[in-house]
Image (cartoon, rainbow, N blue to C red; front, side):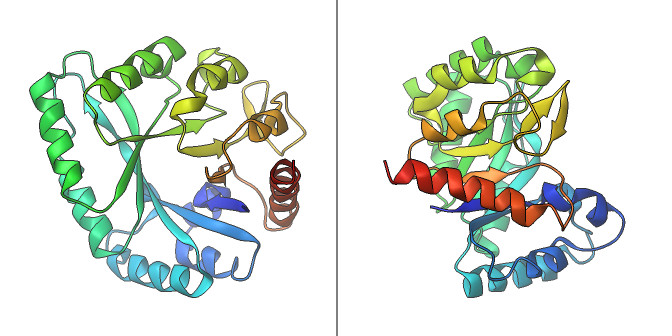
Length: 247
């Protein structure tokens, strides 16, 4: 397995005017397995054309195609009404995986969850929920909600974001120990003083997390870097993955 890339690595440049596609094209032939684009970084007028081109690039590079939805799946007493539109979009543009923030299930009924289960079963798209850096993303809450979703056999995976725990004063190592069996996608960050930094410059024991992660789970670099720094960050992750996989 090799590292994967979330386009958060280019966020500032993309927000300044360049497309996600243009930066992904610069990653051609890099030692990566998957790419994850971010819904909030698309220009609405050119989004469909860009998604088509990104899919073609993924086909050419043999990359898995992931998409991050900048919304919450559960909104206190309702399931996000846009979720079917996102599933339709994913099928249209051959996106294999969608990621969306968990949100709040506290007043979601079993009937609503069963309706979601039926909806998800109609699409050949994997959907994962992600822990958030807010009250919905505390370890206690995430554990409870994942248990609830599992009891009803809702086909949702779980994206573990190793950085988001810091911003709500939780320990990512403790969170990992409690949630490791639920993880299907891993978002990697290193943090120092609640700021994202380059790998090995922060306080996260990120290599220990990778060492204890199942070998089939993609590891996404999901923090801003420069074009000069990114190859070195990819190499650090790939070296850690290779060392783990040779055990």
